[in-house]
Image (cartoon, rainbow, N blue to C red; front, side):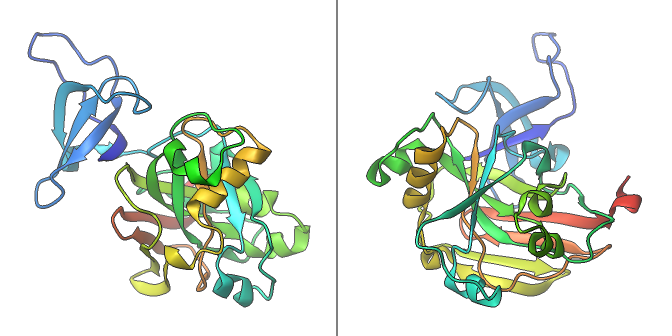
Amino acid sequence: MRIARFVHPQSARADGSTLASAVAWGVVEDIGAAPTVAAIEEHPFGPIRFSGDRWALADVRLLSPILPSKVVGVGRNYVDHAAEMAEEVPPQPLIFLKPSTAVIGDGDVIRLPEDSNQVEHEAELAVVIGRPAKDVASGDALGYVLGYMCGNDVTARDQQRGDGQWTRAKGYDSFCPIGPWIETELDPSDLRITATVNGELRQDARTSLLVHGVPELVAYASRVMTLLPGDVLMTGTPAGVGPLTDGDTVTVEIEGIGALTNPVRSRARAS
C-alpha cells in the first residue's frame, strides 16, 4: 500500500456537503497510465478506512508524506561512503537529528543557504515509525515500522567539516526531502537506491550493503529516545555524494518505492 499526503481540489460530495479540508492522506492506486489516490479518514496509524473521495493523481499535489516530530539520521552506514569521506565505519550506528522544519516533499524546492559553498545530495532509504517504540529488540523492530520512503539527507559539507558537529550542516529548512509516498509492503533488506542530478547518475547501490540494517537501526535508536508514530529514520547514504547548484534537479529513486524529485535553487531565487 502506498500512502500519500496531498492537497486536492476542494469539491462537493454527492450528498451536497463540502469537504472540510483540502489536505488529506490517501492510498495511491493503479500505478501506471492513470493512477488515482483514494482518500482515507483521519490518519494512517491505525485501520485504513476510505472516505469515498477519489482523485486522479495528476490532479493533486503531493506533500511530504508525514510531518515527523523528529528525523533521526545515521552517518557512515555504507563502507564505500565512509571511505570517500576518509572516515572509519563506527562500530555502533552514528546517529544525529535533523529538525522537522527541514522536511519537504516531492517537487518542493531545496533552497541553498548563502553561507555554504558545498551543498551535497545524499540518497537514503527513509523509515517511517508506525507506533511508539522504546527499548525495542532487533527481532521485533520491523513490527514498529509503518513503511518506507525515498529520502535525501541534503548536507552543507563545508559546514559539516568546519563546525565539528552536524546540526547546522544538515538542519537548514528544505534539507530533508522525503517521499513521494510511504510504501507499507516492502522488504527493505536488498533494494537498489540511486541518485541522479540533471539526469546524470551519481549514486547507485543496494540497501543490502548497509553496515547496520533497518531492524538494528530502529532498535538502537529506540534505546536512546522514544520513537513516535510518524518519526523518520534515515538509514545512511552510499558513495557518490556530490554537489547541488542553483538550477539543478535531483532525483532519489528506490526500487519498490518510486522516485523523489526536487529542484534546487539559491535562497535568493527560491524566496
